[in-house]
Length: 75
Image (cartoon, rainbow, N blue to C red):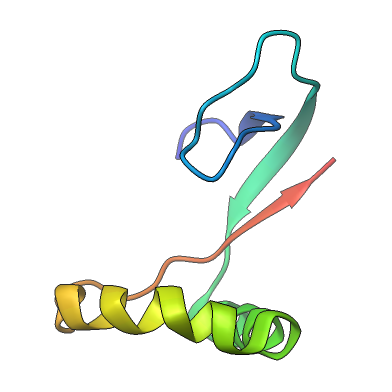
């Protein structure tokens, strides 16, 4: 939260990074609740059932303990 600089690297579904994988530097910022909801809506529209397949179990596990956090990255 003190520094928005980030490095994003290509990885597989398990988060493993291959040797020589490309990276990009960027600036991250936290989104407010309205923009987080809008981003989630766009992701749900783009990925349809795949989004809900991942999101639904996470919602059950979270049980409302933590709100969603949106992060926007500008490259």
